[in-house]
Length: 197
Length: 197
DNA sequence: GTCTATATAGTGATAGAC
DNA sequence: GTCTATCACTATATAGAC
Image (tube, rainbow over all chains, first blue to last red; front, side, top):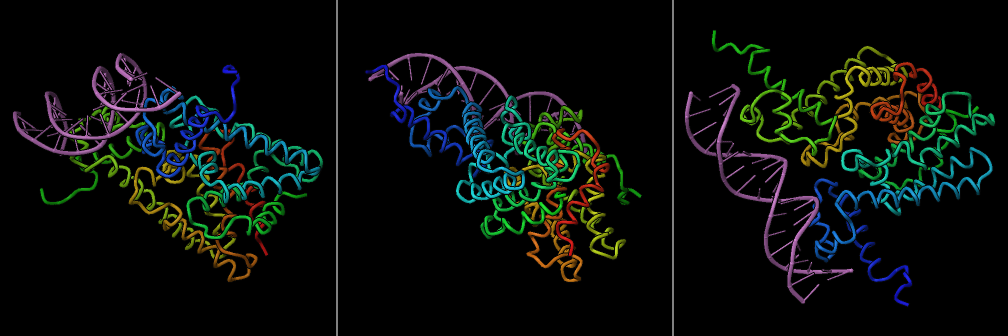
């Protein structure tokens, strides 16, 4: 019985607590302005516990990053499965990322907004990550199917989603006051009009 | 004669050297991965010289930031003066920022790409800076004149320039291999089509 | 597995000679 | 104005008791 590894056990819980506490501090103050002592204090545990679960501060950041990329990849898979056309898929992506920005701002900020290279030199750049690659693939499919004008794939992707990424950044920075989903239709119209055949 | 302050004197030169060295290191390794000792070593001077010209490391970053914002503001002024219509002005802005990305990548990276809040808490956020404000004003004028569809100003600005900002980021990160000016026409067409009346 | 106490290294910044 | 030497501090990470 002791050998059965239960999900949600006390030890696994502590790991999750460290991760969520670190995520919050990293996005609020920045990675370099957050010490391991800050994390342990905020989480109400000792520094020994932190270093029992993670081998370094960078390791904590990497665990967060990889977890978030995995979640986002799953969402992208769902979107592709549930939507037949490129137009529907891309719009669903935009809607999903806007929703996520409202409901999980820390996660979005850390995934899209942070300068990962500076504190996780070994991590895959976000631009080359699976979710971003999938977005480019959607656009490429759209070009192949004639839904989108024939143009360079990165360029088309940037035209279509560039405004979205900037809106997310502005919203996370507090520049935009209104919830992003309220602006989905308008932004989508601008973006799609620019690239549609 | 001694009282005449010459531009380009030896002392002023050293200040410039510190600033340009710091800018290069900040963009290459990040602010927090760059120590004052790194700056002094790279510049081939002593740490005393650095602290004679600047009161702190943050002070160096602020001097760089304010200098770049001033240069960019001047460029925007020039663009407004030399172009009568909103369309011409906005396209000139895009052309200029693309050129700057190729010719002064460090400057562009530090100005647009860095997380200023994390190391210069007191600095004006880039979004509220004069150059960015001027871009919004251009768009507002375009809406007033009927060149751009009637929509929320921040939204219109984001639609028009969001792709541009993302292209710059991708280029600075080495994701895009071709010079941005080569893609100006295509990107402009997408952006303008999306917002034009 | 979690704790406290500590080792070690490097940082930003200052003092004072020249 | 520029230098060298050094301070005071904080950070990451480890050791070892429980």
